[in-house]
Image (cartoon, rainbow, N blue to C red; front, side, top):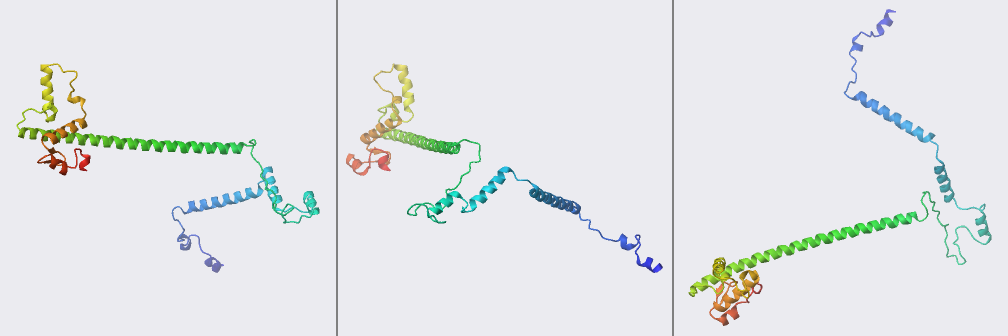
Length: 264
């Protein structure tokens, strides 16, 4: 009796107290999640097995099975074809160039009327075409805006260049006229900075003649053409060459032309 009690371990002994248990954090929660997933999967499998198929699904299954099986002798239509000499797998027609397989069956399952699908398809195509048209018009508008911006930028650049050439011509004209002891320019705007002062003096002295044009009536390009022509005729000077030639023959033979484009 004592031996049996010695063999049995006391629940207060070290062998019970020092048992190491798995107390990693989160481990009980992971076990519960796994169990819940396992139960859910089993429940879904049971629901699929016990679920009763709808009438529509049963009809679809029966239809698929019937279409997969070839017609047999029990079919009256097939029996009539066999009496007329038709053999299974043979093409229809007197010369045997007809169809071999039956015309496929397209079952309409929706509630829409006949031609509704074609209408939807046509509307979708029209919508797509309208979208493409809008994209094309948008791209054209962007290209037009970009082209207009380039033209405006080029026009502005050309105006700045013309104004610079005009100022350069006015300075050259004033310098060359002074060298020839010409005290007053042929036109006030021939010299840089003199035009405004002359106009103010003329306004005080007399009223402007209606037939006489003002410098404001001329564009920058027209002023440049007139002034460069004066420099070439009077001083044999080309502002783009930056050279005063000896005579008209030297000017005509060595200068490319009277405009900036001739010197490009």
